[in-house]
Length: 396
Image 1 (spheres, rainbow, N blue to C red):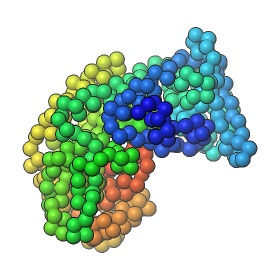
Image 2: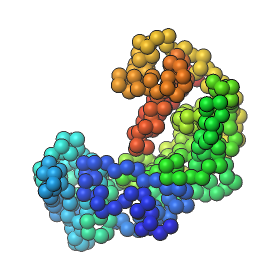
Image 3: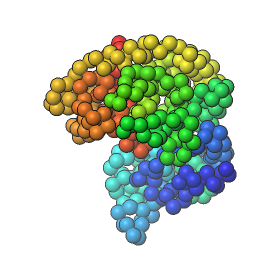
């Protein structure tokens, strides 16, 4: 698949760029790690880091005739070599420009483009102690500005983290893969099939305007944690997720997770030796990532499941609610949900499990179920971690 075909398939196009500063685009999706790696390598070649003096930077807002309250924003500047550049901020780099300018991005996004640009321009020139910033943007005029950071930010490219993950997958003889899907029906419940072909609707390989996420599971070696309502085994699968941000959103890292086959809920929970590895962006970060991730994953994949199975049993035995008030209180006070999310989670659990939330395990499944509706992976993970924290407390 060519770079251009990738761009079209993943929803990238100039028609969406001008609105990104106020409207975050959907995550891109990939069918395989090979495809993701090829795309990210090509993407990196089209981008350049530049040191910019904010006094040589102009931010221009252009009104939208059809929607005067919106419009587009362009960042024009000369870099340290005197070359002229023109980029359009993404949703993420607009956040960073706002932070560097000392202005709240949420407030600026509600302004017409011209006013937002003027506020940014003033803040960057006169409201900060340092004159230099580092930009990371496309080489072509009008291409997107991916990042705006302090001048000393050290960047680890996404493909430098994706490549060691690809090597791990290649060396696993098919063990680590994109998850299968529920297919067919048996006694009113769908049947899990690990060999279903990956589609853009079912893939677990994502890239956004600020980060990349890779979710892979070992779903050919299921772990039984009980029985479903129809008597079939309740199956879970070991998995891991890896992430990176070459735009300053987060560090690189890898963490354990478990996927529940019947509902595809992700349980971000590490009850074994491998829980989470974070790697700061330094010169040798890609090598360190590979060195630490490989043995951790091997130990995780080959270790005993006894502690995990016992942890699930303990979570099921931990009764936390006998009525609706108890449920909402637990989901808000202990689960960290808003009232609205707590009610949605409780209702989703009844719909999917056929009964109200009564245990810690139920609460976790309710939280991770509504997390499936969240379109951006970083936001979804933030909610899934709330469920993982409940499991950690039970098994501590």
